[in-house]
Amino acid sequence: MGILAPMQRQFSDAEPELMDLPSQDEAALRSDLENIARLNRTFGGRKAVEIIFHKLADKTKQLVLVDLASGYGDHGRNLLQRARERSRDITIVAVDVQFQTLQIARSATPPGQKMFFIQADARQLPFRTRGADLVFCSLALHHFAENDALTVLREMGRVGRRGTACVDLVRSRLAAFCIWLLTTFIIRDPMVRHDARLSVRRAFTGREMKSLANRAGWPNLKQIKFFWFQQAVMARASQD
Image (cartoon, rainbow, N blue to C red; front, side, top):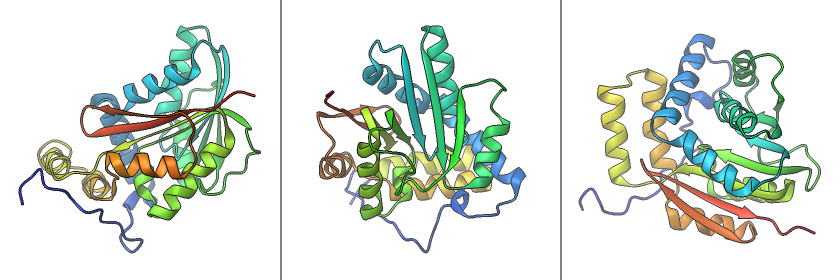
């Protein structure tokens, strides 16, 4: 078949990513989250979120952004830093289903930051309709079965007043092979190795991701491809 042949999505609730399991060893989970933040910084995940943010925020000076499945909170902290550089006043609402992860993210966030942490399920957000300016989800959609992923995107569209964006991996045999090399020879943390290899098999293709966003009713939909097997779908909501 070859390394460029299509790859079926391999998702099973019976085989979760380790970081999704409750009551993980705190040191191991912290190390995993720090490694993911390092990967975001090195392989363009952080830059992809920045690019999408600036496209959707335009020149607006004051924004509330909901960061779904926020993990270590590194994207939110980075956006706060970039906002200060452009004299923007933004508030980040970091949402994650795992309380332990939120505690670690909060401890990594300097005091005085306009960043708030809420434990909630991305499939049922505790926010009113159009209650935030922007809603982002980065490297997390692949954690969900297809129907649940569709529910997450619909919830994002419901809450985001100005726009929504989802950044994730692109599933392919080549991506799986490259991640195998990365986690065999460079990053050998057991949790990262397990979850990274599983993540790429659970990810959506570009066509699947766009189809999900269309089915979720995202308006004015655009799709962007990034280096290192990453993609984004974004939607700018019409302003009343």
